[in-house]
Figure 1 (tube, one colour):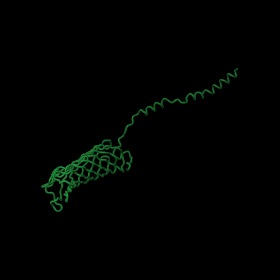
Figure 2: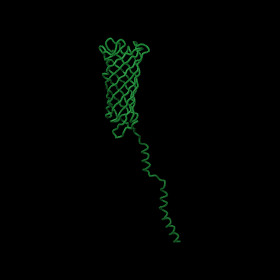
Figure 3: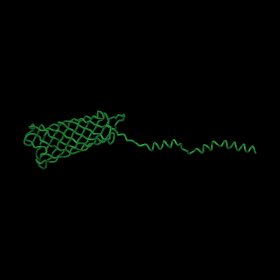
Figure 4: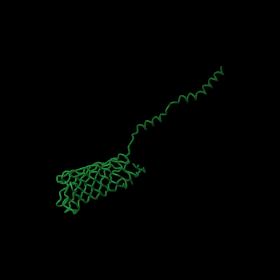
Length: 245
């Protein structure tokens, strides 16, 4: 009898740790469950992608343009010759740092006819020059900017049998806009602008060849539209390289 009791006691002693281990299976530590809930409840914050440095930037814009003001002595006004029309804009620049861009610009537009322009005519204008842009908040999603430039401007009225041509200077070209950065490589920007222009030489139907515009006056071209900017081959503050599209 004593031997049986001793045997049963030895079996229970040996089986105790095994039963304890089986009881622990499937039990999660409270600390693990708490950490899991903290991770799932923490908010995800989006960091603005920001603008690059040392990047080439291509800008393509489309919008509206209108010229107003006197051309010069004995010449009709711009609004006598043309009314508003559509304009395309192409910019190529180098982003020195997130704030500053320097580069060149070009525009081309087709305008509706003014009261003194014959029917079946076409009116065109183009400009090209140099510019600099300053970006106020390059690290934000919405980035206001201002641009200043100067260059050349041409104006043509193609009439049946002849073409009137005028050439001059964009003495100052001002643009302002706001970039919305869609991705690290691309942003869209509504913009408005104005150019102070002076035509210096012309070739009109009553003349043979070009001559100086008598008493040239300063006139203005106003514009507004939407532009897309593409940044390539640049870098950012955190050292990430901008992909080339």
